[in-house]
Image 1 (spheres, helix red, strand yellow):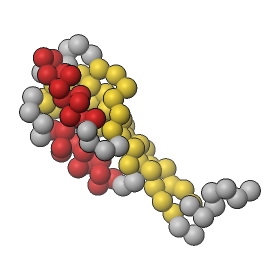
Image 2 (tube, one colour; image 1 turned 90 degrees about the vertical axis):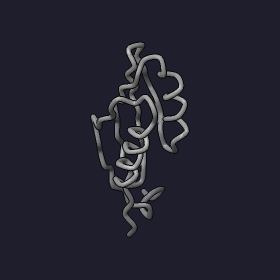
Image 3 (cartoon, rainbow, N blue to C red; image 1 turned 120 degrees about the vertical axis):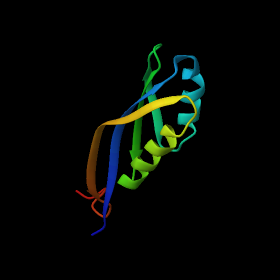
Length: 90
C-alpha cells in the first residue's frame, strides 16, 4: 500500500497596489499556484495544491522575496492522505 498526500493551502499576499498585476503574474509563474481573487488595495488570495509541506513553505519564501511584496501569510492548510493502489477499485 502506497500512501500519498495532497496539501491544499491558501495564502494572502499583501503588495503595493501599483504592483498588483506584476506580482500576480510572478506568483502564477510559481508551479501549483492559482489566484482566485485580488483586491484593488493590493491583496492577493493564492491557493496552492502540492505533494508536500516543504513546497508550501518554499512557495511562501519565494513570494515573500518578490520585490514590492509587503507580507505573505498562511491562512489555511489541509493534508489529504490517499492510497494510490486503492484508486479505481470498488
